[in-house]
Length: 202
Image (tube, rainbow, N blue to C red; front, side):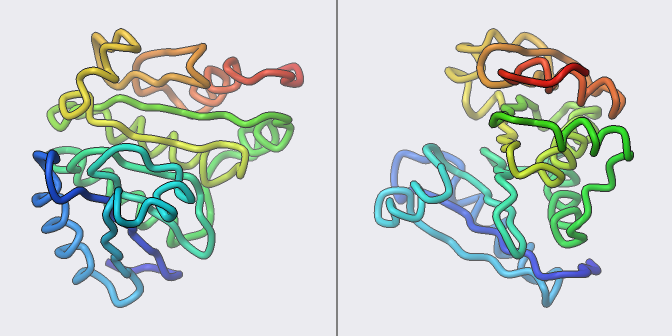
């Protein structure tokens, strides 16, 4: 894996009560071998509670993908299946330090006046979920007002049920607006901005 800039993965786990944490640790350790510019740090949700609070992590397993700064990008679950591609692309995106968004999308996001919290529900067998997840990650990389949690709906069924997730990918914006599908960039940005309060006209 060729990375332009250093990337950090901080994995939060728990010693007990976490069915998939051991698998997540193994995956993180494998990732660390892919590039000399990729470092992996493993923390415990309870023992390292201050760090968990700093990264706004409240469930495990949780992958924090950060670069020279924290872009607010989290992956909750074990990114296997199609989602392994998602994690690799997130690492490459953060390592590039460039969202890759079109100028119009960048302009709209630059006018954000409030924070946007995106929760995107995916499954490991969904072939279009990585496309949607990467688009969302580009948005989070572009704007420091946007945070992104990619959540495996199968590993966190109660949370998925709370937001009535019947199909994936499903994106929930600020817990008040949601939409489904892997939308083209321009439409995705428009849908995301609908969840903002005090937003300028699109």
